[in-house]
Image (cartoon, rainbow, N blue to C red):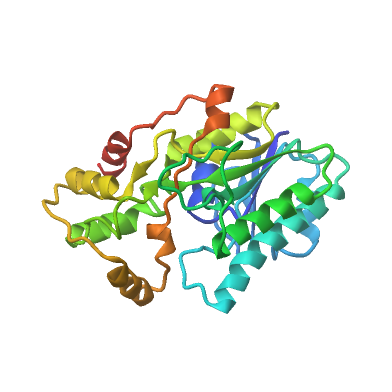
Length: 303
């Protein structure tokens, strides 16, 4: 009987993954801090994301483990939140590695969430897995520590893939809805200079890439989960206004964004960092994108 384990699977991306794979496995188990009512052959098993417990036995004889656990980065980066962001990722990744080590028949493949933010702010150079330059700052240090915990665990019988994921565009959560809301309010102009690159991935490609990585047993290491065509902030906002039939959008300079970010309890990095990332390894391995045109993707998601 085939089993999929999803750690931290109750959020936006976890829900997308569960929905996509619901007919591909005999059983889907979500490791979560809270019970969640699920359908059919999906069930929740309680864990705390940092210590070995009864949940560990679920990994034995599982086909696939996907780890999406981690506090949302959509918050203010004060010391408490910084610690929660870092520790929720490191602790869950380390304890899953320990749990795999206790398995008599460990999962065949372990896909661990990571982030395309690991690369430096770049307006010029496209960042791939081979020549991409790792950046600096809090978010990058979290990404580096996260991947170090993942690849540093001893799992000789489990293939490992780190999913360096860009901004995932979907209808029912993630970054798109707030972008739509501000555009409808007439605030959908360029943010900052507008030149900062926008690396993105449609939710359909996100889960199809996970499926591709599971089935392609030659794939391991870090994979950029991004569309092959990065856009930029100015173009994204123009396309969103066009899609929503909003005739104008007031631009926001950096100072205005800082004030707005403070008021809505988030950080401007999410808008102002230039993420110029391309999926070299996926293209090399033959993955075909369903959505590689941003305008068409937005039309499909907003309709």
